[in-house]
Image (tube, rainbow, N blue to C red; front, side):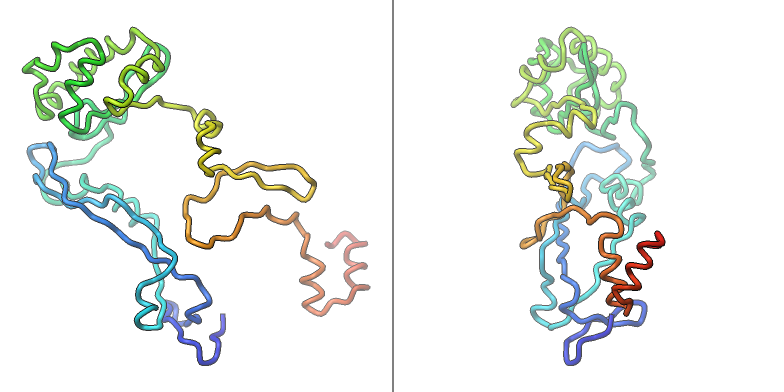
Length: 268
């Protein structure tokens, strides 16, 4: 893309430069927090973990310098960064991250999938205060005082034993029963199929599902982009294949007669 005369430009890694105003800037704000938790004994007790990444519609730099900048994000670096505190544990100790059964948390227990009588639930006791509330809600108040499970460290050491106990209680009733009983007290949610998640009425009400009108008059529903920037244009369906071919050929110098001939021969 050629530079606009007298327009401030931004450097490009491939040697080219673009007008500052030709590409909308996006300010990436990474917020980190210090996390102290009950991680494995070999890990550092305090780590810095990314907790939120948000996009904002403007750079801070152009306001002060008049120059834009590139934001380079590649999938490999993003995947590594998403290891979060597990990556920091591995870098600073002999901790080796590995896949956990039932999508379990590496150190917080109970925090994994559990089986109700009809479907899976995810229960997340990510703070000690949730443990006695879970025991009470499951009708096992005495379990909260069992010295074998008195802390995250002890529950992690006996994860399999505890999973068997909790499964035994949860299997007595369907998921909806437990969600009503535990909801608002302990983090709990059902595991849904992709279709169940997509047809959830709350999803449409929140604006995450959009309906586009096609040229034929039919309607087409699709997910809205998760990236929201102030002033984003309203979504529109793509034009049919070849809808703009004649216009582009005309711009390239083809006459109407030539376009008609190409169309008649099935070339366009």
